[in-house]
Image (cartoon, rainbow, N blue to C red):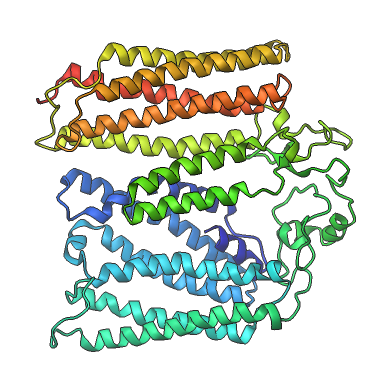
Length: 574
């Protein structure tokens, strides 16, 4: 949706119609998406009430999607469309994705879903949504931004052949699968008896697959050859409106010599001289003597500049962390669980080591503690609300989604599964769990009190006091973690025999992981205070750590109520 909403105004040569409506509809789509995933499971025997809820959510998501589509079509209708190569792929996206959305509404109806489940109809719908909704916009974005990578333009002839082969081949392959699915052909079969009415449809579908493969091959050939034979791109070759096209072709290593003040969504249309002004250093952040990599940091809603974001220097640690995470995913796919556990620990070490080279660390090359421009905006790690705070909050929102899925599963099994019951032994003694919760709450309260003290005393706390507070926080969390570990080790788990025990074990591991990581992060902050990277005048990293501890406290006590106290009050079948 972001790629489409960026490219359509460029090739329609006018601003996007209903910009705010498009933004709100994308956000709404994200929220509704949390409540529609069960439409993949309508045939597994879930209660009719749950089917009705997820069926409604699956149909409701069509409303914000339709808002986006009508805004895009209105932009094209009222503009002067240029059918350049990226616009061709946007055209293919609109045709295919709308068809996939219509069959999606059909599959959201439970009775119809029952009839076509596990048939070629579902395969066709899936590919119309994923290929139309993802692959075609990605190809549009590839061709659109390719000059920024290579400084050359793709071949219009090869590109158009690639598009039409892919478009015709795709529809020939999957449009016919709607018919074979309605005729009863199941998916995931490699052969079938003749005379069932599927023969010629599958033959044409196979031919379409070869045509589409030829189109994909031509895309690869076009992209590879254009690096050597492509026509050199001029400045802003698409006459785009966004700032990435204000650089030279291809962009230099530093991207922009200075950053402009922007008050419009279409800066290059409203200020044609802007690229030259930026290249000659007439905009902001032009000085380079301090040796930092910097961009402006602004408020998410208003766009008002609040600080200067100090970007990390070049490092191998992100690549090492990515390799460890890739090892983790592959190990889980091939069920090599000891290797997956090792990869998890390795990725954690690499990520924490990467985080060490942050803020005031010399590797970040901060040769002066303040900005050298007039006005002296603070660096983000000298504030209390830099980008990392937003990153932590968004991360915890995703984390909370995972946790609430566990809570939902607990209540669902409790109310719907006839054999869901507690094991014979008491697994988690309440006094020990309460004591651990008190210690975790103490750690969060100490960190919050420290930050409040910094604000009230106007940076009056010494580094020694800050360091001692972090050691106290780590100690409280460490003792709580030890209590949880002892309780978990001594509990007579029957996790492979009782779902009740399995859910409780996962809950204990979840909260234990968060407490343990909070302890590690607090110890790292104590070491960074000792090194001078964090101080009373640089409290930013402590502000980023605070939401983690408060989230851990909230999850812990919610777990106590949901998993321990409610079964005691309401009773659970033994």
